[in-house]
Length: 121
Picture 1 (cartoon, helix red, strand yellow):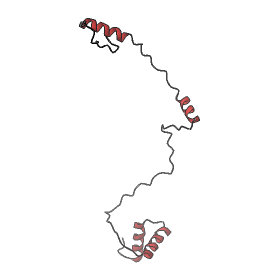
Picture 2 (cartoon, one colour; picture 1 turned 60 degrees about the vertical axis):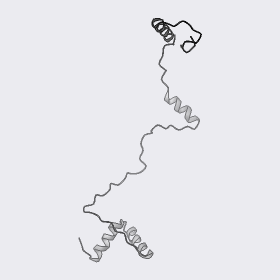
Picture 3 (cartoon, helix red, strand yellow; picture 1 turned 90 degrees about the vertical axis):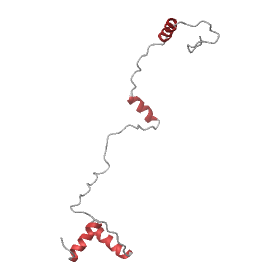
Picture 4 (cartoon, one colour; picture 1 turned 135 degrees about the vertical axis):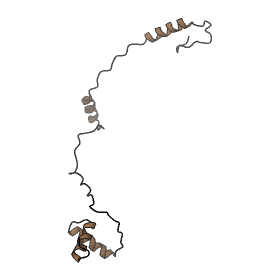
């Protein structure tokens, strides 16, 4: 029998089922008993890694970078898409107006229409 528990070609004797089972049991019993590994001290591991420049990939406590996102406004009425071409000067004037009053383009256009008296709400 070879080291893997298989029969060699020169082995003439065929083992019986009972002897094969007994030898398997003996071979399995020869393995040492499994003992649980000791717990790893994670703080010591992190300290040793930090000394060599490693950074932990585990999640750190959450610290928001900013106040938070603004919630998207739900429109009170259906919306439509408007795409218009403007000259560069007209576009710059419109953007400057919106920036001056801190308005979105939608709100700036609505305010301009309200001021001109076109279809007031």
